[in-house]
Image (cartoon, rainbow, N blue to C red; front, side, top):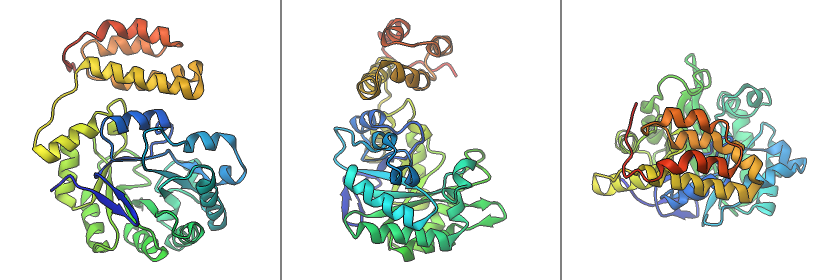
Length: 335
């Protein structure tokens, strides 16, 4: 059966359709609506180990558990084993979660230059030291996982060495985004590498897949073609938390029901309300500009709506712009 539970170390999850850590997006408000619409497991956006050690107050907000999260993972990044170990202990103290994930894949230059993110995928010895330090620091209280990329560039494909280093460090799962650091988020993810990673791990730990998952059919194809244990939606979930329920339906029944425009807009307002509660109306409304643009992507008249959305500054502004489309009974795609 394609839809099934997943075990990460001692953590047992009810399903295998996850929300990936998405920088600037995976806050507690977004994770809440994703869970409400079927996400079986969620990850925070990546949190700086250095910031945690320096007691940066913003990091606590990034790690805050959503009220409906029965289990979630905090993703941390850094290149120094000692700092990562301290950060992991701080996570368990201040934001007790069920899993700690280590980012070994972010391709952003400011992350790489600190020795974190994708730089760890091309330096397996340091990845091993970082992951091992975190595993030792948490002492089995929660499972530790890693997310890697396929390599640095087309001439340096190092996923196998990185995975081996992570396994030797004692991680409980590996996620692969099969693009190189040089690709960033461009080009095509090479799912054949994901299938090879599943073979390489040989069942020692579950393997999760990420990359080019934009609709339920993509998730089904990845599971069938690679044999991975779970899929992680990232960009595919932006403005579309319904993708989790749709994917579960597809995997279990072979079909799924489309979400109408009214439900899309209503969910967007649900997310806005949660954000206002978390960070105030001004900040929430600024953040929701890009999010409501995502919610309205593809609906009839969406382009005109988005021109107005980028200027919305209050909750009332959003209602003025969007209440007129809430009575639509179906999502009519214009692209």
